[in-house]
Length: 271
Image (tube, rainbow, N blue to C red; front, side):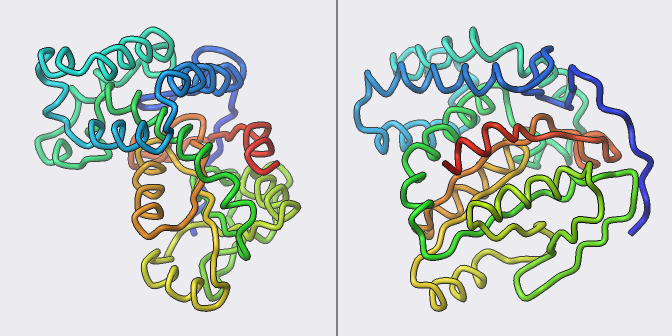
């Protein structure tokens, strides 16, 4: 693996389309904000599963957002989007600039072409899925986590090695986020893997046969995390997840940039 020159991270952290730092020194404010918004709407929509299904259905349809009249026909979604925009716009400042820069081919990539409204709904979706699935995840016979290789220490070569599931962190760098996250996960009896080669469908069949029930924790940029969480839900696998603090990998920015994850939020999710 080619060694990539490391860039020093100094708050605030910026991404291609979003940063959970929101101009602050950490992503703490973001997680408090999305938690408060979810608290408010769950009181109005007491069945979290139905609320989640509504958000997922709307979030999959880009055409829904192209005409204002579509939103006006659904007061709940209209209110939710207005509220999300007022509370979350500071975390999503570069979306339109990014979308305008996409080539015709790139605009067919559902991840790269994620709209502002979709980002807002995805943020809410992640929060709701975590609330709905946390208990099932924590009580699973086997718990596994998939970590993105983009949060590794970019100043040195990664010495991770594959086993029968995927790549495993070898703890070669004390400042590597993958190393720190892996240690935290192991303390909570969660087996961490760097997601490089694993195919979820075949892997889930193996894990179900071996453990009976199992849970998945995902860490990724917001659009990728939602995609992975939906795959797990479709297969009735209890999943929770936490987004990385900004989308700063080569897919988004042409090369890898150092990144972070909110360890306090991860610890809270595992408690």
